[in-house]
Image (cartoon, rainbow, N blue to C red; front, side, top):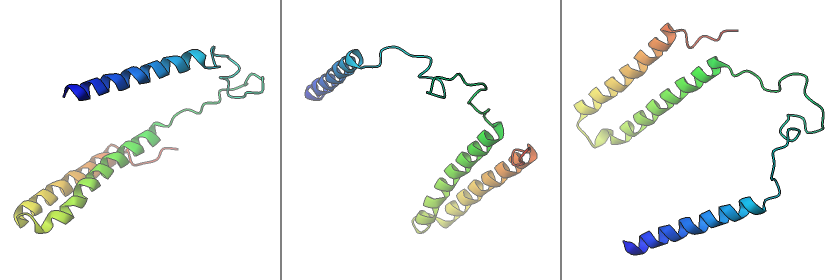
Length: 117
């Protein structure tokens, strides 16, 4: 236990020293306004180069993530079908599917699935 602790401390110490050395000898010392502008040719931009972020795109991404996690819960249920009691498997599948269906109806009711142009 003590040997692993000493190894962890040594690794942290060496990595910290390397980070400090690389920060001190790096070429880039100061932040230049022209370097951080969207065009590095010396001209000031007339408009903002950043496009506004679409909230609708963000909501679709969150919905996809939620349903992707639910699908990753359903897939192992197919594998364990023969290993557990059929009634427990059936009730758990019905409950997962009901959660998915209720989630879709809720999103449809809140009009999160409609694209607004």
